[in-house]
Image 1 (spheres, rainbow, N blue to C red):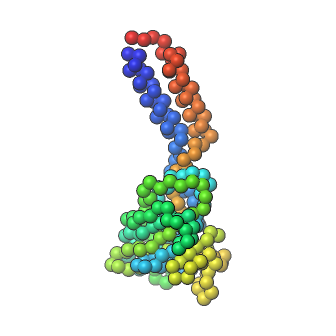
Image 2 (cartoon, rainbow, N blue to C red; image 1 turned 60 degrees about the horizontal axis):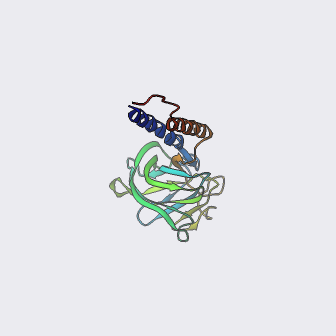
Image 3 (cartoon, rainbow, N blue to C red; image 1 turned 45 degrees about the horizontal axis):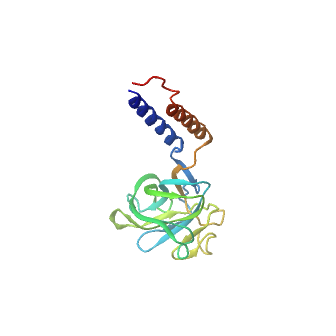
Length: 222
């Protein structure tokens, strides 16, 4: 009976301790909101674009949202993504893949493009605190139309396969008020570092664990 009870208690405490180190899924980084009225970078076929994002702590990434321009009635079906430790062409690719995309329609702009909010899942991507690059390219859409990544003018750095560094918009292009050509996206996931409340919960679990082993929690044995 003692062994059975102790096993049940230890299992519960282990679950408690593990849950203390996990955060809730949330937006870890946001590069602004969808604009849909200025311009956008082509990320279809051989074209690609990339943008920096900052992480304040160790995290597990779960997905990406980004603003997209599509031909009316069309949506993005898949995209090739990569996470690098430096600007494309110079940095090292840390993770990459091709993912199916889900789209949510927002509005149709004055240039007759549907503005969509696209999302895809990142499988098993863990990163330490630091600055990284998110690159999107090879996007496929219904009826083989192109997908464009919405420019929102955030203060992050950006890159385009045709122009190179576009942190500040090249001359001759329509520009946001900031003069920067960065794109809109969210990085979603969970923090790997326990929050203060979770640390207290973990400490309590470990204390109970010690009591269980010492026999103070259960005084009788069978």
